[in-house]
Image (cartoon, rainbow, N blue to C red; front, side, top):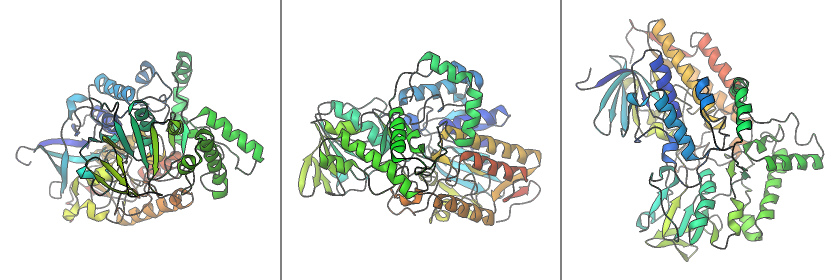
Length: 539
């Protein structure tokens, strides 16, 4: 053991939903587990995203753990779509209820992880100088957890406060009476903009890309509705494991009905609200002509809400099919642009030239602002993993291996990096389903794998290069059967300059994916290379 190193069976990086469930499950099986997290408490993405209006786009009764029936019944949600404060309270309750904090090192950031080929273990180093060693390393770092600031000349010279929605101060930010600029109109931007508009003296929204957004129609959860849903929790959970989230899926194509019937279905789903809108017909994600019908419906709605024709036109997306970027769910987003204190700057028409100390230059005109909010998203799926200097067999760097895009088997492991597991990584359904459904499946699969390794006397496991290549091809083929690659989205890494354009999530339904993962395990981890404890690992 390295002098002064703390030794465990498993080290888990991240104390959000994934890290807490991994800790609870592995510790319950008798493994020595340490979780490390850079935050001061549990929560993951819900610890950092404290911006006004932060809310989950999956209904709260579904966005919760399923592993403990008593926990399901005892926790009472207050809204259809839970806000960040309530979700964070839920995660804190879970940590307290299952006594998880005693195994977590907070305010601890891992900077490097290196596989020791002689001793068959991972050696981790933290920014604070702590050394950790473990047979297995589990990356519970989150798909959307490394904030990205915009690359705009002079932004460092702006003298006012700059806040990213993904790293919002815990004590809050008072922007009342100020001239505020917002860059970004993805999910977090669409949530924060209506809130800021209520308090800022003036709000300037710098829109880089127009996005489709559906009203949430959020509301308090009636006790009887919550009780009825919970009475059938087991059936609901089983269905979610097949389809990802309990949406209402149509069995008809958009052109299987008359134009009037199609319009009525869009109206019905719009009035119901939420992401389920995109499942109005079964070919909207595969047939561009069908998708045009639903996109035209939303664009007509935008024009109906926003009376200024020029503003409405800028808010209407035309550069991607509906649903090929993460569909947004809002509360009063389009209505915000009716307010007299809100101005929309369409950056595609009038690009930002540069920042200076007091504002922004746009097409030769100076826009004064007192504060800047960056709702500019994340280095998704790979960013938080690659932020750590991970070195595998023969000292190979994961950053180098993934230089042309992430390569995994099942989205869980990558060749050349033994005993390194990734929860909801690139190559898994990940952000295309209810994240907690994906998290619970991955933790269960990883735990079963570690148990198998122990029972069969194995020392290391990693994918073969050939199996990994086949999986990457399979993931690409699944995406190409849909319209998803047509959007210049963060699914492809398009929001990060220089990042390779590779479609990262697995576009098949999670039930299909679960069966594929189970088949691999049932066949003795087919496609993986296992090394017994008596056999040295070859460099």
